[in-house]
Image (cartoon, rainbow, N blue to C red; front, side, top):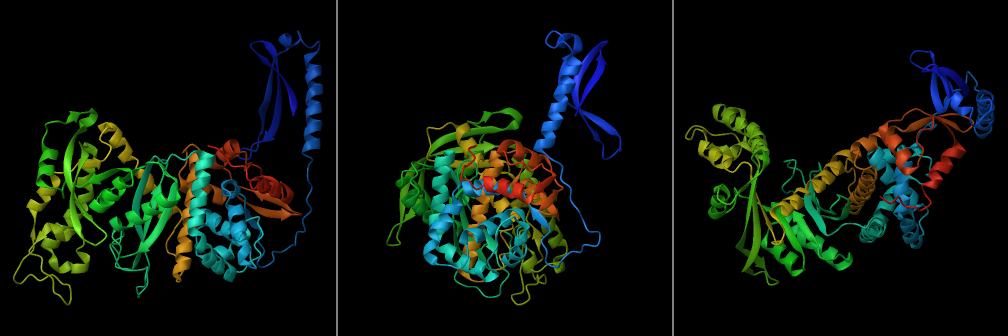
Length: 574
């Protein structure tokens, strides 16, 4: 550092600067460390400001040299790499470690695994699996092969990893409940409104088993699937999950999930938000009898004629900005409930129906349908191009469609396919119209709409799970280990969403994972590492979490100290 004596507005101005060489231009540039002020003003406090601050800069340079002494490393020009040597290490996982330990997961795994008398460290394996699932998702074998990327002890075998999965899944309920209680105590979890949805994961296997069964696949594949029900709080942080056989209807997953919640989670009255797939008599009855409320969507296109007419009738709508309009009514609705003996009973209930129309949703519906309609028209004109297996979606817009039972080919000798224009026009009538049904009849229409719109949080959670965390393919065959894999994904999702929330929602989970994965360095010599990546995510983590990921050179001791600080069980409070 140097004292800069310059001119400003004809007066002598003093500042402390640091000189450096610009790596792009090669020229020396100056960075102002501290602006001191005009010399004539400073003379009121110091008889000789220039001499005074030169002495101060010299003291600062001596202190900096003492606090940060230069390091000299000696290299042998002919030194060669050793096979299997882990020279590349990641440091970005320190941010994940802070939440992992803040949530007390290390204590949980250490305490609950003592009775197993395992030769491996359960906490070390789970830490590897969870951090890798976020930063570098891969099969368990690949994850094990890359275990050296972290500054952690990994004195366990690949067989130990598989054995650990088999044991850990026995603690599934305890782990989920532990995370929930931690979220309540540390972050004041807002669970007055919860969101529920179901997705599934396909498996490219030939034979079905007790869990992997053929059902309605979200990706429209013929492979066996496993169903997953996921519940999140109002901020999108997962509360619990469970898996079901692939042939389980979405609506049938609802009661088991919420029976578990009611029994163990100690929640007060909750409002459950879900799409129309959960809108059944049994689910509504269970919800209401449990003392809870619901906000479900309801299909207008698949509803009664009375509901369709009410939706299209202009009377009662409140016009809002941009062509949006909304109205509501209290309406008696018969629901059909199955009792313990399997008998179905008709039960009348009163619920609020909120209907709205959105021009944007109208355009989106037509855009989403366009490809299917185009395919249907092409099918009519060129039926020989298609078979029953390739007509998915388009067939409903085609009349006189007959397939050969053996080959699946379209038969045209007696019946020529005709585009169903009436079907298309009937569907287009309801584009942009949506209905929401709710037990919360005292709430305003806008409040109900705002509550329902929060459903994107769980849709985003599924997107992160399938996309960023690459929950499939699973690469496991034993069912208990498959379930353990989804448990690892669940914990990883909790940590990733918590980190994203702590960073004020500035970055997506995918962006955070990419940045932390690239925050890595290479071993130089004598326990020194050179780190070569920083961006806005690592900078935000350094500033908001106090985990310094911005140092270019770090000794192994400094790294261990940084990682050690994340394990002190001091949670970050958002």
